[in-house]
Image (cartoon, rainbow, N blue to C red; front, side, top):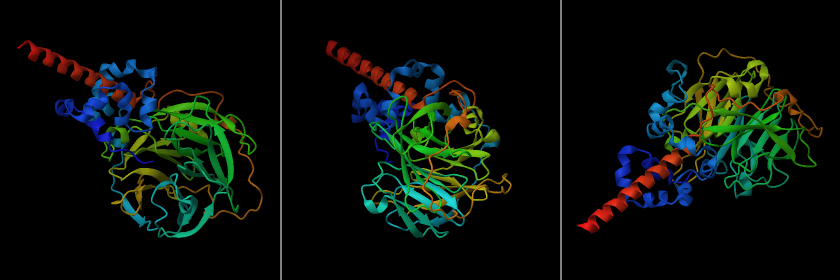
Length: 425
């Protein structure tokens, strides 16, 4: 998903040193109007952030100082121990030089190669599932039987089944989202539609549990929702989802093209080959959670993640583990005239012993029709609402929006007072 350049205006408004120059700039006039304030933010996150549920939180002193000083925020709100963060430089694996693959948003590693999907595209040649070899060259493609809306992530079950998350919704207007299931040996994927229990929302991250239950993770600043099917998937009618829990990622100061907003939204997810860890990524970092006894929801809602910085990736959305589980692989979108070819990067996990993979390196042949997914009963009986580190829910973007509007109001008052004073003279 593309991110608008007006993010820069939002960043300037929340930085004390930039407040005075911005006061009389065009960006300030945008911020003075509440209805237009969302324009200065991420086009997806802003509508959700302006919901009234957390309005009072925007004025809390701790949250306010955190939004003005993102570097200190991670210590004040969601501390991440320095010893737990891995800051090793990325290694280049290979470069994707196929013109059809300029908006890579999902990836899994399979044997010595990769499977990737593009973000939603207007070009039919790009709306496929692409299989790459170890040199990032396309070796084959699989077409969808009908047009997908907005494919955003890719996951692989332990039996080799590929799941494509057709879950993007930048305008929060879709009545259903979808999963495309490509069973081992199948020639085309099968479509399963789903509905949210609490209204439309954007999502870019998908996980699959060891029991083949899909988990959709919403793209909301601060606290993201975890959604699972409320009953077995059906090809005949949309399957309702239920909100099984929430996850809040720690705040960091990792450099990325989208500043504080790039650190606040989840853009991809992956499960380790042995199922003992899950990684969630933003535009700036990856956060790896331990998964106890295969319970992904419990691991995400109550586990303490470690940070793996992914600094300055152009627009990082895809993430996966290597087949041996000893490293993370990422790739970015590369849209735009000056964009470079996408590069698959490798981030080593040096403390990770080689784990025997529960996933086959090659999909076994199969001609049987795909079966509906198992029930989500293994996920747990009810919703879990704890944040990842046990702290209360916190919506980073809501706080930033509140601060922007508060600063804009103060600047407007100051301008009015100065104007009245000058007239009296």
